[in-house]
Length: 272
Ligand SMILES: [Mn+2]
Image (cartoon, rainbow, N blue to C red; front, side, top):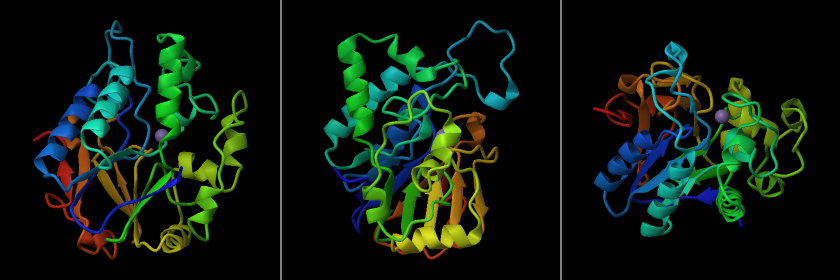
């Protein structure tokens, strides 16, 4: 299978970032997707899993945004169900949290080993199902309208799509994430929090695009334009409901820079 998902040149495109087990936000996103009509595509740019699952604490840290409880397994089930109901129109990209189930290093935001904690709640068939589903996620999506979608900031030095197709995901189990970060392409694709303007320029050009849309990092206001080529979006994790933002665009249009993304038009609130 291809590591690069190629989107068509017509219809609507809805882009949503880090859900981290927030089923309610997935359902809201699915509602926007349904409302966008039969030609709409939905892309979730990774980190579908791993949220806070301890509701007993009295104080919910403000840095976690609006309170929710992890429902990673139900979210993956709902994602799979939607993808089956709308063949070829519902997609997920790999994030660093998803990667930890299919060969990536341990993530430990809410558990010392989040992948192990989640898989311990499943039987062997369930673990196989989860890993098979996550293995099917592409690394990057591109669209003729000029956008490239990925999990983290576009700092990976690539010269073309073949540099993405050549990547292997496994082999990082039990190794510190710095080992992965030190690999030139896969590390930054899944973990980078910042790309310099010239790095982002190289990345989007290598894929024949002009703007990269991604999450991974938190933007409290919902979105941030970092230079002309980078649109960082926070749809769910770590935000208060009122700030949660997704992107909706026209696959038949052309987006030349981040200036072509406008609040209330392409940049929309998840809950309104
Ligand atoms: Mn991430």
